[in-house]
Image (cartoon, rainbow, N blue to C red):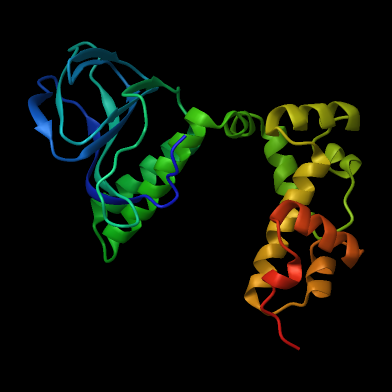
Length: 263
C-alpha cells in the first residue's frame, strides 16, 4: 500500500452530473485525474483499452494522461459526482493514486455527504472556495482509501452500535470507564459487545481505549502546556509510572522526551 499522507491534490473541476439524454464524454486523453462516484443510472466508459459498464455504487479512477470517453443508456441516465484534479507529492512531483480503475463500493452516506458539501462549495464559489474544495478532496481520497483497503472502517461505518460506542469512548476516555459502561450504552451484554467490538474494529475494547488515550496524551504533551503527570491523569491513567511504560511501548519513546513542558 502506498503512502498517501504526503500527497497534495489540486482541484481542477467538480461536477454533480445529472446527464441529459444526449450526454456523452467525447474521446480524449485527459491531462488530470478523474475520480467519479456513480449515484444512479448506467453508462459505458472507455478507459484506455477497456470498456466498462458503470452502474450505481461504482467508483472510477482515471489517472492523468489516460484515454477516456463515455456514452449512456437513454432509459437510465447517469447521475454521478466527478472530481477532476492534479496530484503531487510533498516535493511537487506529479503522482498517481495506486487504485484500480473500476470498483463497486456501493453507496456510503459519508462519501455522499462529502460530495454534496463539495457541490455546494464549488457551485457558490464564495471567498476561499478553492481552498475548501481542496480540503474536501483530501477527505474524499482518504475516505475512498479507507473503504477500499481498511475493513475496520467499513465495518464501523455500517454498525451504528459501534459508532455509538466509539463516540462514548471519545467523550469519556479521561474517566475510569469499563467495558460494561459502553456495552450498556449500546444496549448489549458485555460479553457479546466485547466480541462485536473486536470483530468490527480489529482491536479489543481495552486496546482501543488505550490507543485513544495515548494519542490524546501525545497531543497534550506536544503543546507544552502539561507535565507528564498532568497528562497522564487527564487522559485516564491514574498511575504515571504505568502511563510512561505503556507510552514508550506504543510510541517508542518516553513521554518526557515528547513533552515540551517547562516548569
